Image (cartoon, helix red, strand yellow):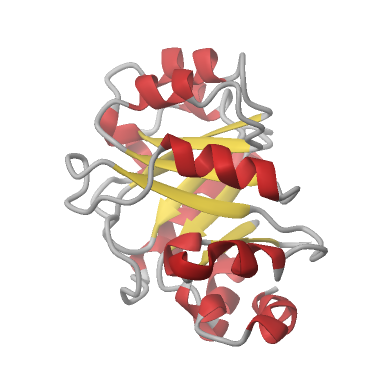
Amino acid sequence: MTTISPSILAADFMDLKSDVDALSGINDLWLHLDVMDGHFVPNMTFGIPIIKQLSNITSIPLDVHLMVTNPNFHIIELKDINIQNITFHLEAESNPLKLVELAKQFYPSVGISIKPGTSVSEIDIDLLSHVDLVLVMSVEPGFGGQKFMDSSLEKMKELTELRDLHSLDFKIQIDGGVNLETSKKAIAAGADNLVAGSYIFKNSKESYSEIINTLR
């Protein structure tokens, strides 16, 4: 089953616990946490204290997406929190393989992400053989509510072909502009994991489960 990762960037931060609680009990779910530093991307979100608090109030696996200039710092600082997956950007790290190997000491799943302007060919095959997940950004990272870029579909198809050709087992995650229409295209292109924010959280809490099932 396709994993859905609701992005709390689109949740109600004045009532965050209630939004998170409303997701409890839904199968194949990750909670997507966008960490932005105002440098790698122009926006800023929450930091380590919020992630620690979330880990204490929910059993939903946490999926941390680091949109930061110094991912090494966050990988070390977050290592004692119960995080299922941590992803950093290929564009932010000069030696991504070394950082993946470091992160694998602390996290069950480690991913890399690429911006819309970064091609799949810039990811070394050796790196793909070490990661558990590749996150394809289908919008420019930094802000929610943007329109889905169809160019991301070709990237997912390329990644699927590389995965099959080299017998690799990383998951493909898509983030940005995911809704009922674009989720179908993304799954057809090879996506195993869909990040969705506004499409889920703009609805009533009682309908989260139903909305998530439509994305699958």
